[in-house]
Length: 91
Length: 367
Image (cartoon, rainbow over all chains, first blue to last red):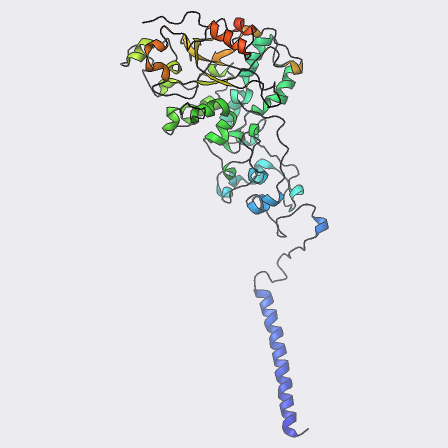
């Protein structure tokens, strides 16, 4: 291996570590600044079929209105009540 | 009225939470579990119909109405109890009658919610307009959901060949005549709906039409003698058996369209006229026999009752000529007409005695 080859190889090693360190630092900066990516945010629970006997709206926590304003969800999970005992009405 | 789908019964408008009632929060009225993200667990302790019973959640803001309403006819259905007591000689508080009424008739009890936020239980309930609270009930989904087959059909002209009520054609609805005071009550319990002092009266909008001084000769000549409906109603529905006596088709005898003028069975401040329209109501001595309830005083009350058909027109067929009433008995409840109905099998012979006070032996003579 001649002298010029050794210098080029050293430059490549510097370039390699520069790229690696840049990538690591960029990733750390993005991880704490992008919404929803921080480890301090509430983690999204992983759905567990055995823990949820009936369909749930989503993995995200919802309010009463969150479910009852969701027409598609209600069509999926609403349970018909038993029919009235008798046909009623004034006549 | 067919029931709505299960999902639609519980669908809430996206903007409901911004409304006055919505801002209270769901659990304020409906309870249920907090912070639970699973359907069955979230509904533990749920109060599906918060206004049933004492309606305490409504009373917090609507105190006077909440105090008066439980005594009203819509809440008590006291007219049924009054007539039961008259025909049975028994107090309606007896256990047999209470059990029968609760199992067969009590669905007609109205609550705050069944008029102002959902359909009534009689048509299987369900939120209306996405849980929107309405001061004025919806005519179709609330009022005629219960009062449909007679009042609703008459008002909208759904009886074959009989036109709509002129008030309906002019954009009026039930609440144009029936006020909140009438429907919520004033804290008293009328014996019957026709004793409700807050009930509608034609003269509220047509003042003077019941006066002998009125410029209209038809009005002045008949003032104080005829109920307005005698001249301005059209033929209406009459029922000849009871809802609790059903055949395989769901009804024992079909209703019949008829128009019968008779004597007023119960003159009162609200209905002082001698001549009124009469409608046959579905009651027989054995109506409650399945519950071992007898009506030994069946003949004590007419089975043709004072009627207010909801198909008013300015010029009805009977007013086309004076001799439609004067000198003719075609429109009157005569003994012969009752006998025809007995022969037909829709009335029974006991009803001759029961209707003695309202039947017309001598229709008005020719002019």
